[in-house]
Figure 1 (cartoon, chains in turn cyan, orange):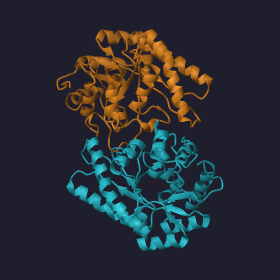
Figure 2 (cartoon, rainbow over the protein chains, first blue to last red; figure 1 turned 90 degrees about the horizontal axis):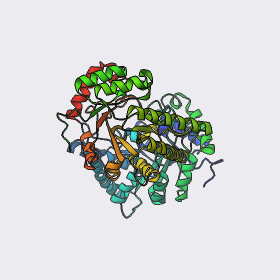
Figure 3 (cartoon, rainbow over the protein chains, first blue to last red; figure 1 turned 180 degrees about the horizontal axis):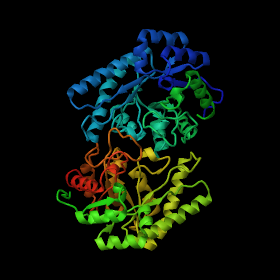
Figure 4 (tube, helix red, strand yellow; figure 1 turned 90 degrees about the vertical axis):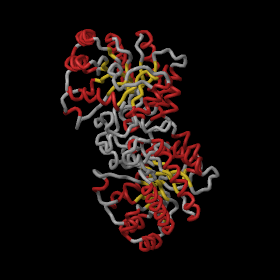
Length: 281
Length: 281
């Protein structure tokens, strides 16, 4: 297992973690601290302009690790499907222009008015299959991110690593390298199958590892995530399982926190991320 | 599949659904409406007195379907384990004195200060195994109730039907009839393995079927459950899977609802339960 106690090269910051800052300021502050990897959200890039954002990243020598995000493959009608496909292709083109190492997929929940979970699962599988063709031609991998079951209805109906890997095996049986998963401890920590499924996924499918923490109590189903060490997830144990597969990628911090971290100075948030990366992750 | 469109005999009411009323009033109101099955919580029985409660149920000809609840098997130290065991035995004795058909188990989350999920799983397995001996001697079945993963940390670290059935098979390989599961659509609807696991569990393990609905949005992780039909769960489809196993038991309504149903007149809540039982469940 890798020793992170003096590391900063394996730390990546998702821009949502410091959403109180615009992208340029975050890039500067990461650069000053030696952080060399950022995953931006689309709205950050839209605000900054893609060309400007790309040059900021390049100038600072910062890797664009991921791009948040594509997905929302489920639809109530054909127009919805077309709009989803077009939006996903645009997102993937943006990710490619930024040089992102991959694009995360939040797959979508039940379509408006629908109770057909099995149908939604099929829409997701077919949508990912269509997008994978573009991912191969653009040479930018797409990563299914299973989200916590508490958001199954409205955000993502793929909620376990097993389900995500089943989709990978079905859609991409030859393991092209362009379809994998993003494993986020926040969404997956509770699953008794997690260790076995991480092993099953292996280095070829586990393309990203995200960290934060589960707070007790959790006061909001979206925006009450904790800083690593402030909750109940045994992050290091899970990282061990991930690294046992040969995973040699980054540990990306993605914290949504209305009541706490989003109210603080962005620099303090980054300093906390570094400290916890080195002591808790 | 059973036709519930004119049914009332298969409807059971969990007392938490009408917690605005004391037990005696709920029993009376159920009797008046033809409802003949109730699952009480322990605090209802404590308030009423066990002997009084039993005579009310008997006089009204109402079956005590379940008893809420035992469990919380996880502990931080030996004193915690002893207290949990003693409390569970008391609860099971109460259930037996009431003539309850079974007692539900909310297994407990992580012990205070612990991040050891695997250890918690073991404590749960061992606690259930100890309690099963008493269940056999008292002839009152115990039912593992997998809860939604959003309460894994603080209420129940068994969150899928598969995990609950794995525990049953491990602890009670001979299928004594005294260990099974309570399948609640609220906790399990999102699981892509649900249909297969219901089939696997079969009539010998599926000892209770609970209904309510998942609201979008859900505003509280404990007390924002919906009345059947007001959310996104395809309850009838799941009931079909359950009845395909030969399940011939009740459909128990358990709704925690701070903002809505708990603010209404109890009689209106019961009438809504009957109407939705006949049209949505």
